[in-house]
Image (cartoon, rainbow, N blue to C red):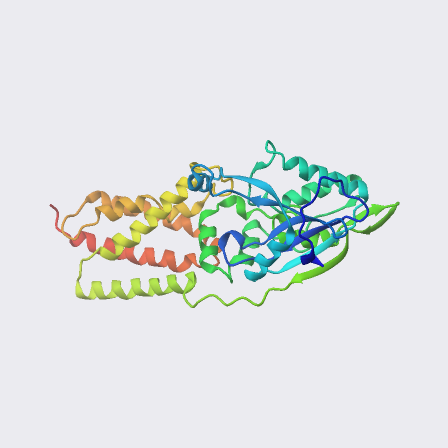
Amino acid sequence: MLFAIKKPLRAQVPDSTTQVSLITVGPGDDLYSSFGHSLFWFNDQAKGVDASYNYGGFSFQTENFYLKFLRGTLPYKIDKYPLAPQVYGWQYENRSVTLQVLNLTIPQKQRLYALLEENLLPQNQEYHYRFFYDNCATRLQDLLIKVCGDSLRYEGYPGEQKSFREWIDQYAYRQKPWADFGMDLAIGKPADKEATPMQATFLPDNLHDAFAAAQVIINGKPEPLVKGEQVIFKAAPRAEPGFLTPKVFFWLLALLAGLLTLWQIKKNKIQFTFDKILFSLCGIAGIVLLALWVGTDHEDTVLNWDILWANPLLFFIAGGLSARVRKPWISIALIVYAVFLIAGTINIDKHNQVLIPILLTLVIRIYYINKTLPKIPTS
C-alpha cells in the first residue's frame, strides 16, 4: 500500500479519509543520522495524497556552509516530499522505519496541515536548529500540542530519565565509540543536565514512545493518540565496532608512554619528540574546545571543563621543549598545567572512563620531563 502512492499532496485540506502518521526512522551509519529521524506523513490512497513533512533539511549550497555549520548558525528548514522514495533510501541504509497512525479529529488534522504548510512558506521555512531543544523531533511534538490543545493528555517520554549526555551515549557509545568520544569532548556542562520527559523527546525513538503513551479526548472520552502502528522496515543487526575503540587506543598509548618513560630513564635518554606530538595534539584540542566555547552559537559547548587537561598552554610547552637548551619558564608552565590536569579529573565520568588513560599518559610524561629538565645544561 505504501509504495503505490506517488502523487504529491494536492492543495486540499485533510478530511475523514486522510491518515496522519508519525514516521520514526532508526539510526544510520553516518554521524548526522546516528540518532534517528522523525516526520509527519499525510496519506490518502484514494485521492493520491502522499506528503511527508520533515524538519531536518539543510543545503550544502548555503554560503559559507562549513563555517556556519561549525559555528552553529547553519539554517535548517522544513521540507515536503512523498514518503515512498525516502523509505527506499532508509532501507538501503539499513535504518528501521515505523509508522504510527494518529487518532486526530478532522479539525486537528486540518490545523496541523495548515501549520505545516505555513511553515513551508519561503519566509518561514528556515529555523535555528538546536540539537537538544529544537530539532526534527521536538518540532513535531510542539505542533501536536498546539493543534490538540486541552484535548491532549501528553507527558512526554514515559521511561527513565537521563542526562542529555547519557542519552547520546546510549546511541553512540557502543555503535560509534569514536564519534561518542568526539561528541563527549565537544559538549560541555549543559549536556549533563537531566532531560525532562518533554525534553527527552529530542530523540526520535523517545518521541515514538511518548506518542504511544499519550491520549486524546474525543467525544468526552480518553482514547489512545496512536490508533495503529506498523513496522515498515526492520533493520538488520549492525556490526560491532572494531577492536580499536577509544578506550583500547588510549590504554595502549598509556602503556607505550609508560614503557618509553622507563626505557628513557634507564638509558638516560633525553628526548622529547613523543611529548611534542602528545602535547601539541592536546593543545590543538584545547584551542578547538575554547573556540567552540566562546566563538560559536552552540549553547551546549560552553562550560567545557575538558579544557583543563586539553589546554592550549600545552601547545606552547611543546614548542619550548628542548634536549639541549633549558628554558626556565617551561618548569613554571608545567607546574601550572599540572594544577589544571588535577582539576581536569572532575570530568572522568563524562567520557565513560576513557579519560583515565589519557590523564595517566599526561601524568607519566610530565613526571619524565620534570625529572629530566634539571639535567639539561643551561644556555
